[in-house]
Length: 115
Image 1 (cartoon, helix red, strand yellow):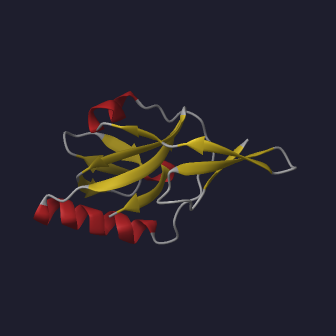
Image 2 (cartoon, one colour):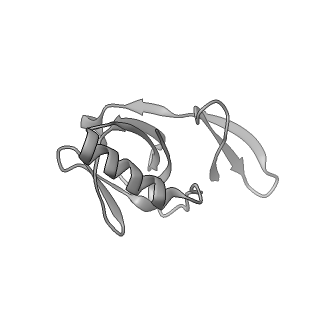
């Protein structure tokens, strides 16, 4: 099973391709609170398609968070499926981002940042 982000109305759904016949199924993105992010697990090693300019978007989100305390929506995948959290990005490292409160998300699991 392969997950691919669908560009349907500001990333509200994901397309799931099963097997080699690529039968599309839609999976809702679950909105969660930032306090729920530490409960997410990232043990599965599935590849997540990402926006081509994701690193630039992450750095811009960090600048907005640190200078203006602005929040962004982060669409990411954990072991249970796609999720979206709206919060402040405090730091961007090589492999993780840090959110308010020391919460982190692996960059390899982030699909997109929505300003």
